[in-house]
Amino acid sequence: MDTRKVMALALIVPPVIAIVAWFFMGFVVFGGVGPDKPGEYIAELRANSEVVKYVMPLITILFLAAIWGINYIKFF
Image 1 (tube, one colour):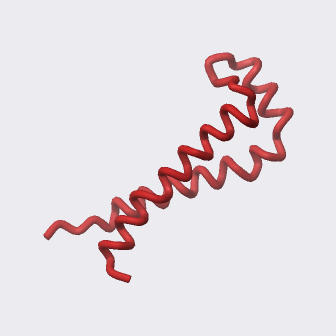
Image 2 (image 1 turned 90 degrees about the vertical axis):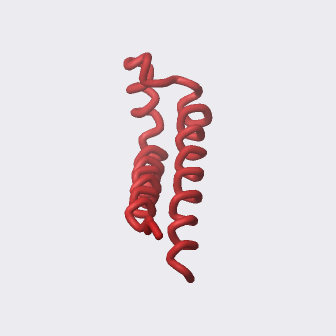
């Protein structure tokens, strides 16, 4: 695979999946409760700790993959 294709995929795919996963966490798992209501947010984190334990690191890795893709941009 060409480095341009790898870079393009690293810039497009991980952020899209991470944003979808973030909305999944916010609306499906937490029921629309956000960090603007800290007490309810912490209660939802505690109630759904099993899902949060697996999805939050995945979201972080996907955003790091996007940063990795930015690192490989070559200007010609």
